[in-house]
Length: 319
Image: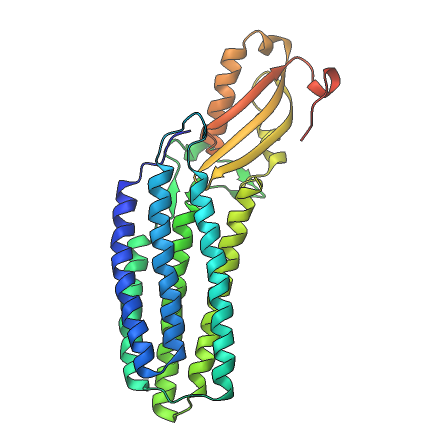
């Protein structure tokens, strides 16, 4: 299992972390100064951006460590654990925002709308810069993927771009915060023109919804990997059928496909060969591995050859 090699990504993360920290302090101070809950809510969201990007950077550094005797797959799962922690903390933040919004709905305080508007514009501009820095970094094309051999699932060609779940989580934080900033700007404009202070409370509640959606998406993806669910875009039935197209392969069973982390897919399978293939196992093994690597982007494979299905001989679990 190859360690992550991401010096360019680490540099972008550090740059994003610096920009995001500036937004946080500006909106935190501005929120207390203007009395705006929407601005404070956005500051809380930005704080989670800082936390998410910092955690992403730490996870990337640790996941680049090589395997050892106690961690034979290396430290790749730290990426997934960091993403899960990000999702859980976002859930807590959204609940806190809704509670404060309810309190303020009962008695809306006065808000400095013009100052709130200026700070929100600055926050939006910096968020767009950070999103641009991280854009495209949460997806990467498998370098050994052959576009001429891409498989088709449900009529749709499957592109072998791999999402780095941890970076994707940080990217979602930033995009969500940019949307939040737009909401704060709209609220500030309405308050400035009408004096409806309750709009600030409504905007903060909507920001809570945005945070919740991001939290559920990231948490669900992280949990799916941790319970070793089948990677997104891969059907085990279609994969087994595809493996049968390799010469001398008669049967595929006990097939398992899972993510080590968002960037590494692993596969294990029992393969029954015909008589000719059983005497040419090395060649068939090479063909199968190349088929899985170029067609599905799966590099880490464990394949056991058999003359008859093992459930008919010694007994084993079947997929």
